[in-house]
Amino acid sequence: MKKGLLLVTLCLSFSLTAYAAVKEKAFTITPIIGGHSFEGNLDLDDSAFLGIGLGYNLTEKWAIEGVFTHTNADGEDGASDADVQTYRLDALYHIWSDKAFVPYLAAGVGGISTDYDHGDDHDHLLLNYGAGIKYFILDDLIALRADVRHLLDFPEPDNSLQYSVGLTFQLGKAAPAPAPVVEKAAEPAPVVAAAPLDSDNDGIADNLDQCPGTPSGVAVDSKGCPLDTDGDGVYDYLDKCPGTPAGVAVDSDGCPLDTDGDGIFDYLDKCPGTPAGITVDSDGCPLDTDGDGVYDYLDKCPGTPKGVAVNAEGCPASLTLHINFGSDSSQIGATYDSEIAKAAQCINSYPGELVYIDGHTDSDGKATYNQTLSVKRATAVMNRLIEHFNISADRLEARGFGEEKPVASNTTAAGKAENRRVEVACGAK
Image 1 (cartoon, rainbow, N blue to C red):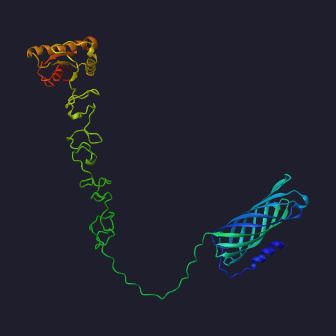
Image 2 (image 1 turned 180 degrees about the horizontal axis):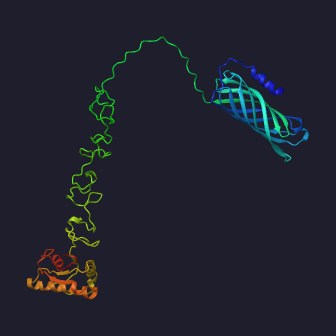
Image 3 (image 1 turned 120 degrees about the horizontal axis):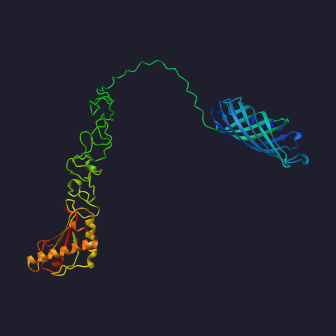
């Protein structure tokens, strides 16, 4: 107790005139160091301890604080050493809360744990009361602190004394006090100028309004003009297609143009100029159901099998077989079965359709003879399809065109070889 009173006396020796205050609704952090004096029946010598306190100022007068301390106590006269820990919740009452020097009273409840080296330990209820002082050395931010507590250990009860010093850090600022009201002599009421005229009630005075007559309730900019968020030249309240991309031409409703009327805006239409009434896909292109590259509305042979070459009308083109007929010859054998197999595949793609096998010659010899020779060449291919590829004879018809339809010049050997050919019009109508 004498040591605690000495600490209080030292703190009272500081000047009391410095400005400081306990701040309402401020948090405090207080690291402390001190001594713990145990009564005789505890068999422990007086020992130093370390601790920490965390507090909150409810008002300038009242505060709460949680405190934890730890003491390594030596045994008295050869008794067992012990670790002593206290943890408590205290209430503090500040006697002078608006001075640099702040005395306070404190009391609280908590617990004390004592662990002896010989293995015995116990946890007890702890009551405490005491007093202390805070002396603010840096405005209302940091204070020196001294404290004395009487500890009552239940249910024994055992008595001990803690005396400590520390630094209190006060965090947060209370709201400033209202400025004193200074009464002034009554002044004459100012002359209020008439408000500028705003005929369309859009919040912009007529003399500044660049868009007079805006309908009631329409949002306007600082110039009094209705908003045009997408910048397409059509005010938002009239725009039926808000969010049009920048630079896209729009109509009077603010919608992008659709010149061909297919339902796809021009800036998205990959097939502009589609005829009226034609069904299109999401890109604005006419449908091509069989995927032959000819739009359905132009396709005279819908349903062409995938991969079959077609002409501009969507119908399968004649398949030219690369058979090297000798001059004045219509003989073929298994050598050209790979070519004839292509014809068989094409024919089978159109079950039930009549297929023409057309023979052709070069211009050597008489025309009448070449006509007969071309029929023979077509017949040779037809017979090969029937005998080796199981194509029904009822579906095939051999025709000869002689030298009438050349596909190359008959003035060169290479051109003549190209003209000696057979074409299969599979799927042709």
